[in-house]
Length: 171
Image 1 (cartoon, rainbow, N blue to C red):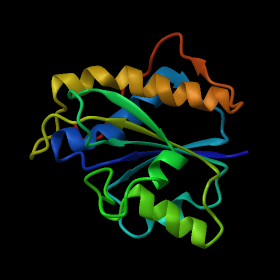
Image 2: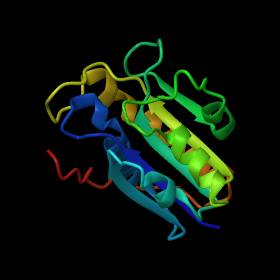
Image 3: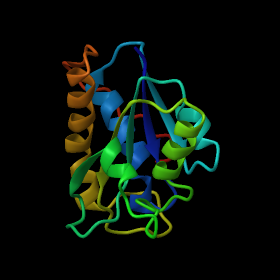
C-alpha cells in the first residue's frame, strides 16, 4: 500500500502557502515509512490528476476557504470533496482544484480510493512568505490530523523524540 501526502499552495502568498508548511510540520514531527511519499507540489495545474494517480491513499494539505475563523483545521473526505456543488468548483485558491483532479483521475481509473483534505482557513493571502500567527499556530493540529489518518490506515507513524527543523526552503 502506498500513500501520497501533498502540500499545495503558493509559499509566496502568505497563508496560501499553508499546505507546504503543514507538510514540513508533518515531516518534522513524525517518522513515516517509505511507503508514504511527501511532495510539496506548490500550485499545480492540470497535471495534478496525473500526480495523484496510482496511490492507495492521498492526503492533501491546503488552504480552505470556508466560513470559519482563520487557523481552523477542517478535514474533508473524498466523498465530501466530490459532493461540492458544480457551481462552486473551487475548494481552494487553486484552479483546477482537487475536486476536478479527482474526477479526472477517476475517469482514467487511477484515483486513490482514500482521500483526505486537511484544510486550514487562511487569514491573509497577499505577497509575503510568512504565515499569519493564527495559521502558523494551526500547523501542529494539521500535521496531527494527517498522522492520525495515516495511522488509521495502517501505516506505522511514530512521533519523533526530537522534532527535526521544519526545513522550509522559502524562509
